Amino acid sequence: MAINGKILRDAFISAANCIAANKKDIDALNVFPVPDGDTGTNMSMTLGSAKAELENMGDGVSVSEVAKAMSGALLRGARGNSGVITSILFKGYDKAFKDIKEATNSDLARAMELGVERAYKAVMKPTEGTILTVSRLAAEKAKQLAAETEDLCLFWEGVCEEAERALEETPELLPTLKKAGVVDAGGKGFCMYMRAMEKVFKGEGIYEYKEPEAKAQEPVTIETYASAVGKFEGEITFTYCTEYIVRKAEGCDDSLKLRAYLESIGDCVVVVEDGEIIKVHVHTNNPGLAIEKGLEFGSINLPKIENMRYQHEAAKKPDKVTVSSSNKAYVSVPPEKPYGFVAVAAGDGIEAMFKDAGADCIVKGGQTMNPSTQDILAAIQATPAETVFVLPNNKNIIMAAEQAVKLADRKVCVLQTRTIPQGISALLAFDPEADFNTMRSDMTQAFERVKTGQITFAARDSEFDGQQIKNGEILALDNGKLSFVESDMNKAAYRLVKRMVDGDTEFITIIVGEDVSDSDSEALRQRLEEKFGSRFDITVIRGNQPVYYYIISVE
Image 1 (cartoon, rainbow, N blue to C red):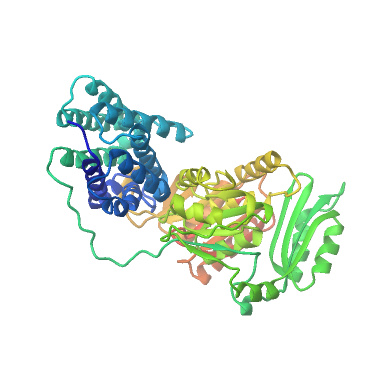
Image 2: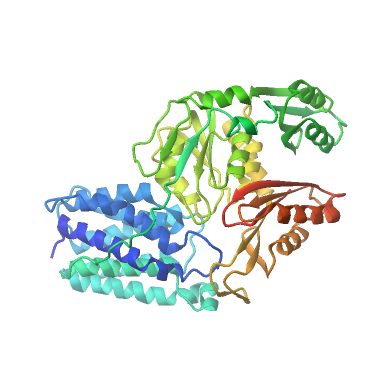
């Protein structure tokens, strides 16, 4: 039995419905208890991005047309690593079904094989015991069965059974799954949507699911900025945004003295020493004094002074563009400069940090709200640069960002920043005078030197790495790995800083989340000053980020 376009269309819709209905069950399989977008949610949002397009296709379509529409919509709508891998697996159907009206078992087997090949290539370090393993073994079984039978139902039943067998073996391949007593979440999602497709192939109809009535999720927005300006005129205490690079003179004073002086004449001070240069950023009413002080440390290069009050007035005009991810028709602007930056961030304070450091475009997103490939693509296209560097700032956003590279009309480089401090450090290390390869290398080395700590809460009861964790307990993460569990967020932050600092530490930066009061953050600052103030430069910034009570940067 051959599959026509109508059957394939309905099978894909059935898969999307099934994952939407069971996303919470898939989410619950996640081993690590931190609050995040979760596998089931990301797979559901990814598949759902193509559902509406498929529902608008008539019954007379070919399998080629259906697969192409599905693939294109999934590519742009992919969210999180699980969503991106799912979109790539379905891309195999587009490749295998090109220019054909109906598909055989052999075509289906080829589609699965091509999808798996692309998925393994897309993942930098493929891990067995995940959706990759389940889909690969299912594809191998499909190839075997396609040579044995032309019966679609018998063929697909065998493929589904092999996928489910592989899923049950995932705990043997990943010790963390075995300790938690669960199977891989992505692999579970794969098996579920394969069974949902089987319903259509058997003539049982589409998996039924009705979206519950709920408050609509605020769409991800992308904001572009001509330059760094205050959000409201009343907030601009110091008028001039002043930036420059110091080529250090031999035997010059410690850059901490430069930072201390700049803090006496302004705010938003950033002083980063890297090898032979010092990169400076300050908001001040006396830019001349800021530059004169810099000359005491060496020669000045690339000075830039911008009146933020004038820029605020300009920002009220139509040259500030907001692009909603819910609208596929994004604004594409022509390049006006060699290089530009897109950063993913959440929290007005963190967004301001990236804008002040030179980001052209901010995609609102992060933990629990992974932007799609389409969201990131819109930001790239709205950045007026020939080459755009993308800072994902979250490990679960990197793959979606990399998918946008092939869709953009300009050169794109994704720097694999996994945290907000890494993203800021990469941006501050940008040297416009360097060639592309040098600047990419310098920015990568800069963010790789940064240690990141995060204080958050457990989203579910679990056992991880021998620790019993209860829903709501405070989690301390050291470079993404669970360090310890606490009951008090300030005590957790203090303990984590003590663990992270070493003999090479110079700077400690604490970024305060939206759920932390000023009194709590001040209490933490005072305790850190008492312990480390004589040894390290300590800065506390209100980032107003969700999910994380504190984000800690140690450099």
